[in-house]
Structures are given as structure tokens and as C-alpha cells.
Amino acid sequence: MRINLLPKDERPLKQSQVRWDFLVGLVGFLALAAVLTFSWVENARWQALSAAYNEALAREALLQRQVQSVTALRQQIAALEAEETLYRDLMPEQPSPAAALAVASSQAAGQLWIEKMVWSGAALRINGYTRDAAALSGYLTQLQSWAAEADLRQLTPQEGSDFHMFAIEVKGVPRSAAVELD
Image (cartoon, helix red, strand yellow):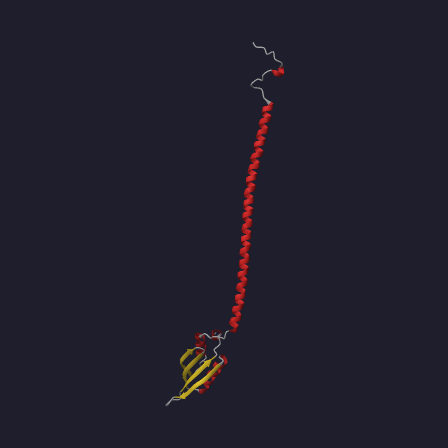
């Protein structure tokens, strides 16, 4: 049997006995490790958020520059459209040959037959024949109300019949001839 004669405070500890100062140190070390880990994670998160914020600011600046360029382009387009409108208003009216031919031929009435229509620049030449001078006069009146000038250039009677050959020249055909066709 062994007897320990050392005072109780100086006796060596048993293996099963808890050492409180070691546990306090271990808990302190774990707390320090946890604080350092969380601070490192939060620092990484803050850096990622800062990078995203800076990227968002750069994109916002880019979008604002694009908006300014689009606004400038819209202003240029509006100015060019106004200039185009001004030039169109200054330009003389140029008729559409197909529309002018359609309107001129649709106004021919009963005793009037059109043989040929020739478009030459700003003038329309109509050749045909009629049996009734009143029908020709009515046709000429309709053409004069539609165009700036409609002149009867030639009227010759056909020998051996009651037909008359005519030639009409129409000038100043309006640009809106297609609208008048409807």
C-alpha cells in the first residue's frame, strides 16, 4: 500500500480528474478560432458585395451613356425628319404615271373612246375618237378640274363617218392622283 505524504494541494492529479484551467484555455481558443473564421467569411462577403456594387455602378454609367446617345440620335432623327418635311414641301409635285393614267382613263364617258395614252415627263397625251362633241367637252372639263391644264391639241373629223379624232395634252397632274382614283 502506498501512502502519499504530500499535502493535498501538491499531490499529483489523478488521470480521471478534470483540469479546469485546460478547459478554460481550450474554450477560449475555440472562441478565438470561431471569431477569426466568421470575420474572414464576412470580409470575403464584403469584398464580393463591393465588387458587385462597383460593377453595378459601371453598368449604370454605361447605360446612362447609351441613353444619352439614343436621345441624341432621336433628336437628330427628329431634326432630319423636319428637314425632310421642309424639302418635300418645297419640291414641286411629281405625279405618279400609273395613277394619272388610271384617273384619266376612268373619266372617259359613253360616246368617247381612248386609243392611246402617252406619259412624257410632266405631261399626259391622250389620243382617241368620239361621235359626240358634248362628250368630249365634258371629258375635257373633268380633266381640267383634275389637272392644272388640259388642252385640246387636235380635233379632226373622219371622212365618210361622223367620228372626230382628238388629241388632248394634260399638264400639272397632281401628286395625289392615286387618291383621286378611289
